[in-house]
Length: 167
Image (cartoon, rainbow, N blue to C red; front, side, top):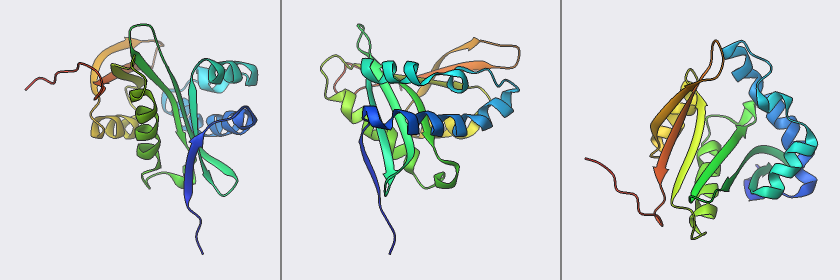
């Protein structure tokens, strides 16, 4: 009998599991860009707890194991910044990242201030870019942040916001 993956709000007790999962998941990104000093790999447990306290986090569980996570917050302009979407390597390519992205968007769409969603990824992270584009995100800017890394910022409007798509 198989187990189902469940998605729920992250709790303070999940912070250590999220940090370990984040460290595991960002190894591929660090290797891709030749930089093991990227923020997700250097973030401390205290920083992660503070981040969860300032915003909202979700975890996906397979039984008791945290196998995926995402978090974000809404700023004063109504932009929901979605960050650190991670899926355990053995759970990838089964739609879990998309489910988490949909769930965090649904959470922030419920807040009157969330007019748009924004996230970023590295320019060579084709799997991430493919997922975000499939969910309606479009590139709005790029920023060179290291000798080998450009961050691509992608954005889409919230159904609750005043977004108008161009033809």
